[in-house]
Image (cartoon, rainbow, N blue to C red):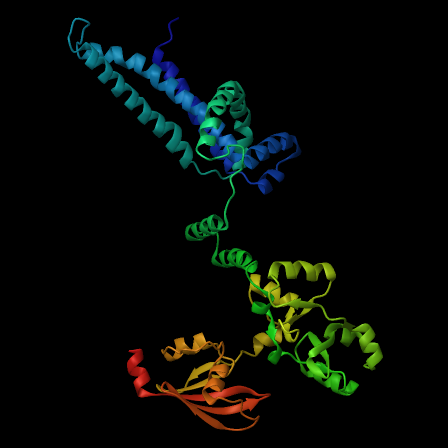
Length: 439
């Protein structure tokens, strides 16, 4: 029985379609999904996992197989269609245009077969949405592996000739491709746009990458915001400070804020049966763990877990205390603010509050960038907070409890509250020239 030549092309197309379907199914699998397969399919799951972990090599080998089948299908399609086309156009061997017509018909046949192959074997399999890719992958794994083994000599031959060419181009074919941080961020953004990753997950992933770039100084609570226990205070004074404060960790200082002799954990403190100093020092106080301002957040987090010391004293280049950083501070850099129930019930007052079109109520702790944005002005200063900017305007640090005024070409600032040599509250009046310049 004579088999029509074009049936070989059709068979090659069917094989390509199944191989593409198998490739899409295997590469769509996840290791978590494969782990849920029944015990009888564990061997298939292991083989699919192996392909997933070397996806580039798997895809390259499969592309070599399908490429050969493309050529085979196109060649046999041309062998079948060309004589038919030449007969249909009545082109004979005696005709002077026979050669030109032959190659023209061959090109037309190959073009037609390529279109069919691309549509039926590539586009359609690639557009199939698998509800359970693991099941498809297990079903087609044997078929895919058969052709990979069958064409293994061809793949080895291609690698033998391709590797020297890649090396000449400065690429090591045996070196695995390194995925950069920027590529992962781009994939996360693309996943967010398509709805595969929600906004909270996107923010979480980005925070993880930014975490390595943060330093202890970026995260720490500044020394001016720390509640301190002094060695010269009585047990009752300690108890009053700890009870009234919402902090968990309290640096213990002797004589100077820069001389930290211990860190008290309030959770351990409240478990004690007595507030007697010796019992407190033994049961609720640990030796201070000092870290430089330049310490990287990821290394600091790792060291704090290993030491089981969940609060670190950040020191500056002169050995003085710059601030304190806790494990909670580090976690908040990744997952966002962690609030207690009572904190949620008491919302924080805004640091910048407009009173009218020209008058503003501004706290000294307000970041200078936020002040610029709120007031619509440009403030040329190297200070981080509005308090530092106002102190520069004054040229001195005013005494606690005094009420004074500072003025420059941009604004008039009335200082209404000063505590511990820090400007807490101010009233700001913008000047007319400033508004015109801003416009």
